[in-house]
Length: 401
Ligand SMILES: Cc1cc2nc3c(=O)[nH]c(=O)nc-3n(C[C@H](O)[C@H](O)[C@H](O)COP(=O)(O)OP(=O)(O)OC[C@H]3O[C@@H](n4cnc5c(N)ncnc54)[C@H](O)[C@@H]3O)c2cc1C
Image (spheres, rainbow, N blue to C red):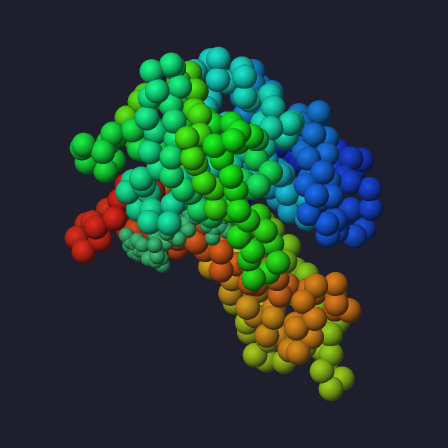
């Protein structure tokens, strides 16, 4: 297998690297810190996404006709590597850019694409994804949030969503509703694009243990959804849910995990206990070597998945491998990082240590759950990659069935 990049791909990397050096937020390359205040952070991230979008670096994987760069899968990999290298600020409209826009490009109407895509790219309109409910998470097809036509070209939505990331700042929601409950649970679902700023919708933030308040409960009380903002067909929303899920599972965070590993390695080289650098302790050396091997194996797995997707043209179930491997590796690495720091890890954030990952460690539990839990990803890999029989005991219809 040839892992080297072509001249064209190297040019893409250098162009992006030069752009980041020129345009990263002021001071970011020396000290990457997001503002503490919630409102300031949102503004900072909106500005950052707008800066990316202005020069065509926000949706590199989108087709050029919709404002993207039409980047190949290898260029997308380079993009992730370079963004991880400078620990770039996240894009606030990540759900819009990575999940909703690609779904609209595939199954939306031309009017929907023209109306929504430019404002997704510039973060002028932020999006959230309304799938999970208190009684419907892995088994999303059992959702009950109901939409009923009122005869005036509008639908009235009633029900509740939960764990909805960014709903508190979102302008629009990609909302899955039940429009018919007479058939099987995968039937009778409809996806609407719903405006969040209206009387029938209220959000309540959920306070997470690492101090984040980015996800929410969302209540719908006769909220209005317009008939021309149905994605796909009425009662055929499951196909749309599956289209979005393929994009949701098809990404990896292995490059940012590698950067965290390199920072940890540096910490272990410079930090001493009783005059000896941590890295000289056998147990610590062995674990660092083990993480390095796992990271290199994860990257090789990702390259193989990218090659397969380049041949088939669509994201396949292999994306679940990238997701699962990244989530479990991140969790184990950060657990090790917290242990290796000893009592200093309790300093939480902005402590005197060069390596501070306690809140990241707590957040890693949620990352394993978001976009379908690790168990669900294992089911997908077992059934759809390895061709194993379905688990008869499981009565759920998980996100990628
Ligand atoms: C950080 C974060 C962000 C999120 N953002 C969003 C968002 O923006 N929009 C949104 O709609 N949702 C979001 N979610 C919700 C997320 O999609 C659900 O939490 C997830 O799908 C699991 O659903 P659940 O919490 O109801 O757990 P359940 O589905 O009740 O699962 C409980 C346990 O049972 C296991 N289990 C369930 N079914 C099976 C099975 N068939 N086989 C084996 N094991 C099984 C699960 O792995 C888990 O351990 C987010 C969650 C988190 C943590």
